[in-house]
Amino acid sequence: MTQFSDLLTANHAYAAARANVADARPGRRLAVVTCMDARIDVFAVLGLHLGEAHVIRNAGGRVTDDVLRSLALSTHVLGVEVLVVMQHTKCGLAGITDEELRALTGADLGFLPIDDHAAALREDIELLATKPYLVPLKAIAGFVYDVESGEIADVVRWER
Ligand SMILES: [Zn+2]
Image 1 (cartoon, rainbow, N blue to C red):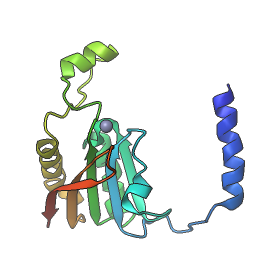
Image 2 (cartoon, helix red, strand yellow):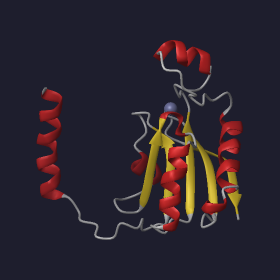
Image 3 (cartoon, rainbow, N blue to C red):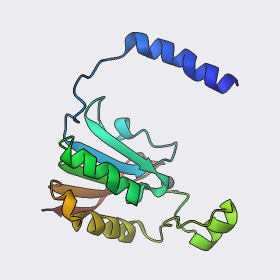
């Protein structure tokens, strides 16, 4: 499959020129939870560089059990204290229901669709803020990234 060969060819060039980061702890003590959407270049959007942040991605950028699992490690093992939860405009999980997504995929799952970005961000940040094991988190921001303008709306803030 040429897709895989293309990826490996690109890797040769990358490996020859890459910067090395020895410390696994994010330099800015930051984690970003965001959507898997291919239009979001997380590092570029937020002005981040290699080694500075954990980036945890899934459909919708929602706070799932697996996001909580990752953040328990980010905070307690790797020193993360600040979190951004970033949803985005034109998201495939917005304006659609669980029933429609189950019909579309044939998967009997809870997809965490988004009715309203601000409400979904508030719900997810409330969940994060009330987890006793996430006590190292000092501040959380809920952003909505506009995939057309590239700009971020600063929607929710929380601080301990
Ligand atoms: Zn999305």
